[in-house]
Image (tube, rainbow, N blue to C red; front, side):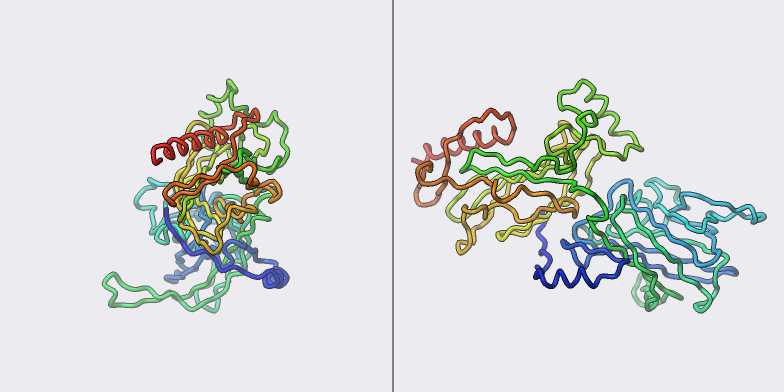
Length: 437
């Protein structure tokens, strides 16, 4: 578990002004307003008909990484440029190169599309920070792996700073939609230090392209939802129904289906990009459950559980960001595809701020939840587990160190595992209280 500072909160009036004054070529992410992916082009040398450039992509987003199958970068050439060679990446299509005699360019398309090489690429095709299959960490996870780069030899192009024409209409998939890229802009040339840091060199010319993310552009529905429970109320508040859209049940897989084993085997095959979900009321690929477990004198305990309902997706280096007045936390781990291994959980012991702590009016539940940088759908506040009135409360006090409230558990016919965890937690608490008294 790593602890990171949360972004500065903004007033509603400032947020409204920001939305109104945005450029149409940029997007806005309220979780990480300054987060972006910047592609920097450094021309390292001139050639008889063009230049050699190093393209470096830095992921400056705090909580959103690029997972498999990785990034895809595209653009449109300003003239009739071609890519003679690529190191550390490759164009997905060569294009029409019939007018070249002898040496054939790597790509002749007016609108090339570039992808990272896979791990294990031949040594002579590798470049610094390449060959990760396009997977790039978030800046908040690990800045050293939040970068990807490759080298291009460009021909039929300008051979000086004045004759070079910048590419335009940049696009970025990371790996799906959601990113909007601005225009290429010339910036001061990048400075490079020698290994012994005694000599400085610089690029002949540098330009940047900035791409920003918007969840509204990426997805029609939220890709995750939140359910809630607490020790003081037997009610488990489920994810809102049809959070991911009301799909036909014929397009999902029942948890006890006989074809489940074939589905799990199919999850390891490449090319299955469409989600195949387990049949649920919410039909979300990912569910985050927040359970208020216990209340001590100076601390309170929470369990966070994440379940993957997508049989065709493994989440590697995922991030979970939870906004709550009592803490700022950042998580990362490995979440397997739906099935026996598609569930992770973590318990947190949080120190109370006695000036604000309360179990009333839903204070103990998160304000916002983000999975992999995307906002999750929370239940409406009026259905949160409520604190019972005094007629239904049992008050324990042991050596003035432990204070808990519990409403008598009532089984309402649900077989949900979260309901059983509540009952189990209460029995353990009751046993420990007997031992202390």
